[in-house]
Image (cartoon, rainbow, N blue to C red; front, top):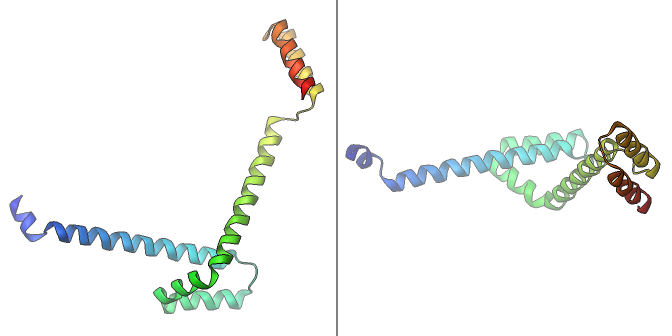
Length: 133
């Protein structure tokens, strides 16, 4: 055990972890930039190709220039995408949950009452809630 620590000291372990972390962050930034370039609809194919070539030929400079030049656009595109996903999810939940039509709710409650799944008191409570709003 002692021989291992002498050949690979603790500071070198921390340095290796820092290098790995920075490499991971770099790869993540590369994916973010490529994803944003391809998601953009305000530039054409040549503009996208230019950004991709810039990032490939001068990787660090290309990514940092893109992040500095397009940070506001990236934020707006990301927020639009999140809002679209949220509205799609809300629409899906509404479609799955069924309508909030009081007559449908009362009809379902009536079926449950006839089947014996709920009591008369529960039926009256569901009916009151449906008619209230």
